[in-house]
Length: 261
Length: 88
Image (tube, rainbow over all chains, first blue to last red):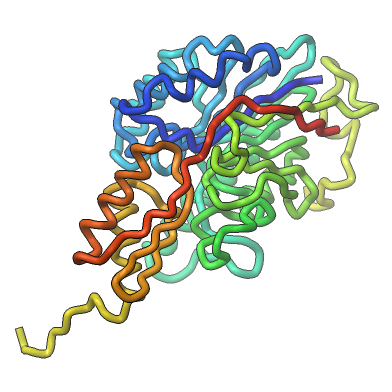
């Protein structure tokens, strides 16, 4: 089994430096890994990135993070990612990583993601270049997410994004802004890969628990939603999936994987 | 100027949208609900710190054209979790 700690939307800044970290002292006793679902900063400045790096440095378990829209606000996302990496944080941007958690291989793939909306009420790759760029950004990312998830050679697979892959965890947000909170294209990539869990943030007024259309569990770990410094999830390797040996797809086909995959 | 231009702080929907825009651009809070009713601007939502709560209020006040601000923003209390969800 794997114990996952996860949080998103930390929104740290120099004036609050050290406050968040003070709540992470017990994390290593309860979790094998800490997943951070984006929006580590408020304005996306390198200075805030350094504060975020300080909060996440040496927490006692591997930290895997993605950036959020706030972290892009000052066009310093690359520098923020570098500052985080210097502090030992793995920053995913459409790629993946595999961690050994006591003999069980945990594969995590992810990145910021983007919006567009959900089935039946979403933006289309049509019309003005601005609209195509909007939808194209999500499509590009969803393609990379799918490939990164499928490429993971691991026992358990977790998707980590800032934007939401499903509508269920947005409940509480005004439906009119769903297209700015996530996209079904992310959920489709997650379903295609047979992931075990999808973590996201971004939707402060949403709810914690949901499912993708294909039945993968989704958890919105934005701090205002989980109301704690992080949420804890225990993942048990399903019976029939042999830890450390079997390739995940092919030998076991969870019933939620769609036929077209 | 044609003389037709009007002060668009009325109807209040435009003002609340403009305040929301300023709060997003300057205080970097995207999820704040802003309702203008008469001379009162009501702010609702959740922020992560007391500093942020004050900054959103100050930004809204600056954009509110002298209206009273009712700051109903809630600071999220961040504590260590008290349990683990088992997913299997």
